[in-house]
Image (cartoon, rainbow, N blue to C red):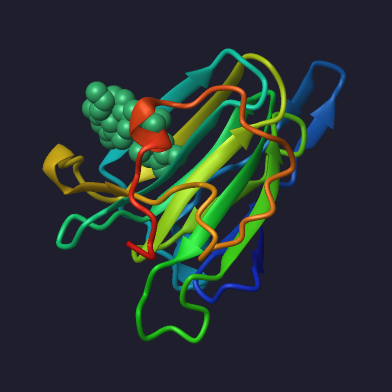
Length: 176
Ligand SMILES: Cc1cn([C@H]2C[C@H](O)[C@@H](COP(=O)(O)OP(=O)(O)O[C@H]3O[C@H](C)C(=O)[C@H](O)[C@H]3O)O2)c(=O)[nH]c1=O
């Protein structure tokens, strides 16, 4: 696996090293030892999978309120997404800054998002499948969100969303 820090401390882009042969390829996409060597969480208790039919579907920006914070290891298993993490740690020097990465079925890259961050993505193709390893048990009552187009975040999405949940359309703005 290949580990690269992003411009937000704590958020990592993790690549894989597929071994190709005449059948196709094989790649290691998770390893406790390699995660531990980079000081990353490696105890995950849930794996989730979301499918989005329409191109430019937006999901997010979501986070879980403490003490139900989640570390997420996000991968795009089918199609392509523009994946975003937003720093919500009040004492961080990158508070409210965002970082993004294009995760695709082909590049097999994953985004590691620690607790204290919001996460969201825009699908770049039809029929996208996104998998998440998650470090905490889901607590619906602790679900919180931010508006994808909140001016306080200034996220430069690559396209206008074509579909999103009413919940995501109606999160409160940070300006209140
Ligand atoms: C997140 C989650 C949801 N659910 C239930 C709750 C709803 O009844 C249904 C759909 O949930 P939601 O509309 O929040 O799904 P997404 O909009 O895809 O949200 C996810 O996408 C953003 C980008 C994320 O980072 C989170 O993983 C997650 O919030 O699944 C569960 O049962 N367990 C879970 O862990």
